[in-house]
Amino acid sequence: MARTFLTIFGFVGVLATTVAQSVPAPPSPITVTPANQEVWVAWGASAGAASYNVYATNTGTYTKIASNVTTLAYIQTGLTNGVDYSYYVTAVNSAGESLPSLQIDATPNPPNTYLPSFTAAGITNAASFTQGATPGSIITIFGTHLSTNLIGLQTATAVPLPTTIYHVSVMVGNVLAPLFAVDKDNNTGSEQINLQVPWQFAGQASVPVTINNGATISATVTVPLTAAQPGIFLLDADKDGFLHGDNSVVNAARPAQPGEEVVAYLTGMGTVSSTPASGSPGPGTTTATPVVTVGGTQAEVKFSGLSAQFVGLYQVNFVVPPATAAGTQSVTVSIHGVTSNSANLPVQ
Image (cartoon, rainbow, N blue to C red):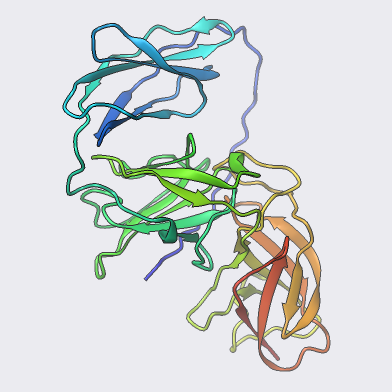
């Protein structure tokens, strides 16, 4: 059974000071993961670096194969299996280019039994589990061999979200995606990765996705992107999806009152008034005003935007229409012409 993982994180203020910039230190550590005619090169951040250059050789003479890389990984493709390749990475800023990192070797090889495998159909909205992805949203990838030797659940513990959990990383386009969790269900063997689609790909029709499970890397899967794909997070087995003002679940034991303001949490609501950094919360940012219907009647929307303490999570505050009949009412949220899954709202 699919599982959704959301954690509230605190914030720490940082006092910034201006200092003269110097050439950054070489990136460290540097790692490589071989695959079929490919090598995934990754490195640690270098303080003060604006970008990175990647160098490679299989002859003894290094050639720059990538420049101005702003993420912490790069995939070199079109390689020859069985041939040894060597790599190093440099850090770059306005003061210049660093010395080379440590050199590291990798030999591309045919896929093995640990090859991560997934399809475009296995990439879904993390709330509705509808196929597809929206920049800035939380998605769930289902597949096999998404991790190696993992039993159970590994989650992020801080924000900004990490880009590696239990040796697992996901490259979306040319960006390492922020990860919420990597999970292998002990009972069913089902595997999933929960991550945020980086905001950088807003406006694109599709994006390539590649998974590194720490032993090898998957084939690249091209995933269509949509401007919006709203999904309401369901909060219990009865498909209730709403909270009272005190953050308790609206359910049959404590139904909503006509005229009460309630809160829904969603993902996939699309662009916001001020885009936060990928992997970080975005307090105070708003979306276009969605259409919320309760039992077929349009509700007044009080707020729609990113939730203050979460990554990729939106909240919509709306008023239960005063004439709403008692009983369980179906609620949907529509934005940019796309309608969410339905959730139950018990009303007194």
